[in-house]
Length: 383
Image 1 (cartoon, one colour):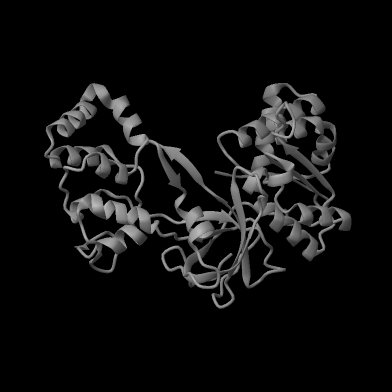
Image 2 (tube, rainbow, N blue to C red):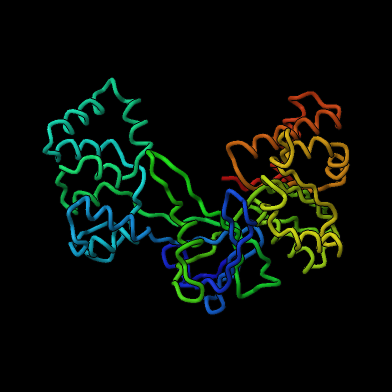
């Protein structure tokens, strides 16, 4: 847990002191290992905790919005949670989220355009029967798109910022043990890029950390966020960890912590990603941990390395008998990563394991896992 002092509302100004690419040449994603210096902060963390990071928006996006508003950026605006009036540029850079435009803004835009065709299009989208069309239209756009598509709109800076939500910090699972790195925090950051409305989009915080932070120079506001995701108090308990992709982060911390604490329990890791050659995060570390006995088992699932896709839930089913033995011996289960697909599929594989190996009906298997969750023997950190 973090000591009183620095917090979400009063973050510590840290610096990234190390950065290295985890993905190899040819990978369709970019994932980085970052080391953040917290030596003078008084912050402390426990494996399972997250580091909260306050990002800033990309200057290029801020500049485009200012052009759309026909503003210089020096205009003074008032926003909630600010000590006083600040410049429009500062508000757009550090305080406000620039994505997810609302119906209310579309209504404001409709009243601000001077071009008849634009006004007609917006009225059609705002009609009661066009609710679904408006949702789809706005879902593909950010505020900058709307200003670009309706250039005849005249919107005062204060009116514009009143529509924007507050920029929020992002939480990253800590990938290091404070026993080994008491003055540093390690993160595993996937730099998010995607496309909507024929525009390339960039994850706000992942691109701030991964592409815009200058090592040793850029100020990075951070805080420690306590978590429910915790290792068993008894070091002799076995642990089974399922962490595909960047879900591997807390388990790197878990294995480091258990080794440093002299825990006698066994450690079994399931890791999955697309390709073994380009996306096997921390491969050398895991191989070394296996060789030294800090990691008991490592099962991998690289979905695109063969014609038929293979995922971590498939590896769980393949190893159902051995997993059930570990669970019967008191092992704790941990899952970290994607909530929409992976976590659900892994949960289904574990229910199947309980049903098959435990001779349970489906309802009994589900109830068994529910009880494991209540007993804190089955924990998930999903997003």
